[in-house]
Length: 141
Image (cartoon, rainbow, N blue to C red):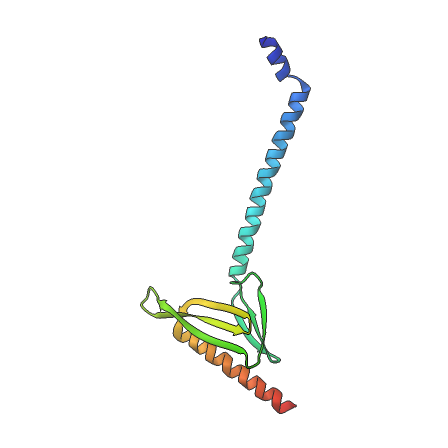
């Protein structure tokens, strides 16, 4: 009885199946770690991208790593609303806020947990830049 078990363990069929299982396990673990490394690398690379807000040709272009899609475009028209919203008091006892951009059904929140005065300055500067670009567009027509 014991000799049959030993003979079965030494059979070439058993060795081949064991090698296939071992190779598949190694491949699965290697693939898992590779995918984990690539995802972490992409997250770190996206964090290095700063948030950019530009007004070009009557459009507000937002590049931000906070959203799944890096680039968002908003048409600079009267339905575009840019406002600073207070979110609370930060750890350094300063008022913090976020920048909210809305246009019809599109709603985007940027620059969370930043100093509210900075956010207000950004919102006012964007509003002034959009108004100036609209005046320039009207004057050139």
